Amino acid sequence: MAIVSIVALAALLCTVGADAQWLAALGHVITTRGAIPRGIPFAAAPTGHWPNALVLSELVLNYAERLAGDRGLMLAQLLATATALAFLARDARARGAQPLGTSAALLAVGLGALPSLAIARVQLFSLALFAVLVGLLRAQSRRPSWRVWLVVPLIAVWSNLHGAALVGELVTLAYLLVSRFPRDRWLASCVAVVSAAALCLTPALLRTIDYYQGVLTNDAARRGEGMWSPLSLSSPIDIALIVASVFLVARAWRARPALWEWCVIVGLAILTLKASRDGVWLLFFLAAPAAVGITPKRSWRALVPVITLASLLAIGFAVVRGPISSGASRALVADAVSIARGSPVLASGVMDEQVALAGGRIWVGNPIDAFSHADQVAYLDWLDGVAAGRRALAAQVRVVLVSRGSETETLMQATPGFVAVGGDATTALYERVGKREL
Image 1: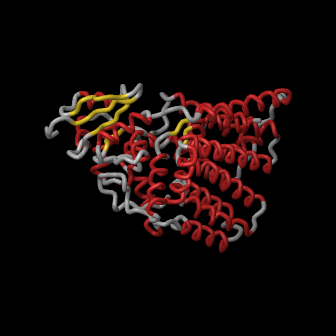
Image 2: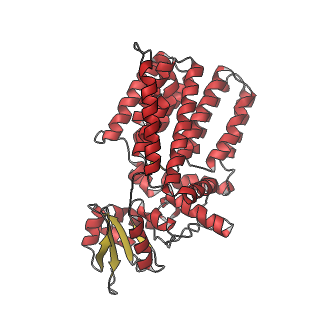
Image 3: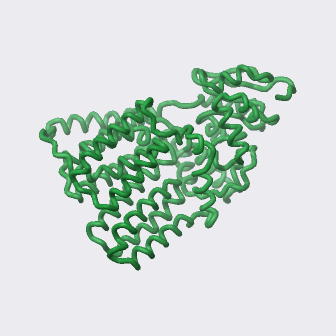
């Protein structure tokens, strides 16, 4: 019941967020050309140095997008969410949790991690794979065997799909070094080395290291902006994450997690403080031990059929409706690409990815780490509405898309040489007029 209820809530609130459509756009380029392009082919700013490690996720998301548009990305997100929750439930039951305790823990996870479950991003691959990895490691903690080697192909596939494979590797190392090494030093050492090397089994090979370095050191991460924003008490979403985490930790304490599990919990808590989006991994990891420590005094079995039926109907309605609209309308994106006539469009939010998916060109956008430091700074300053951000309005940029009411729109309203020429309910379209240098 808990799983279908959470999936239903995620379906009703589902939207396609940033960091999904650019992969679909790049996947389309790969399938069309039959080869992996150098850098980001739909970006005007230089990106030739960028190592493309996520080709597999680009191909999968392109297939989902071409098959059913944004609804395809939505279905992929919901499938990943359901898979992750199913593995978390299995992990909890294997640890000895009761059905009601498991349901309560999953509901806490669902409410605390709702943005990660309801917003379709490339992170969807990691939702399922993280849950699989944690279940595997806990099974090995209870009954050590040769199956620990399964983490190697898991990490290898994961690294081709999403950068959170690095989090998975750190969790693996915590188990191997703290729990397995004292029992079997040779095996633990070999698995640790080979699993770390498996991170580089991508089309970028050894340059995968450069990819991870770029992800961790890009300017958005340094500034703590966007998806890299730190945990904040002023955000209702972050408050829900904190409440869920405290609840789960308090219940997990009763289950007496092993030392390696506490090391992981502390490490994931630190990551969450630095970037609240990493809180989903903390909640996922806490689910099984917390479920053991939850002993509900009341049974709600009579409501199970009603809630399950309502949830299934909600999922069906949400899928037919499609994801909640975000960014610009397709008509406006098409107009922007048409007006640009091959020149790059400067766009904020998810709109840069919409332009790329529509066959247009952008100046800078996602993936931000693919661009030079100077271009990243200029683009982020422009997004923040800082005057220095006008450097992003390079001479070749003729068309600009910004969210209405944003600081970026305020900056564009005060920028000479650009005038508003259209828009929709959420987005304003600006075009360069004359030849005035900025």
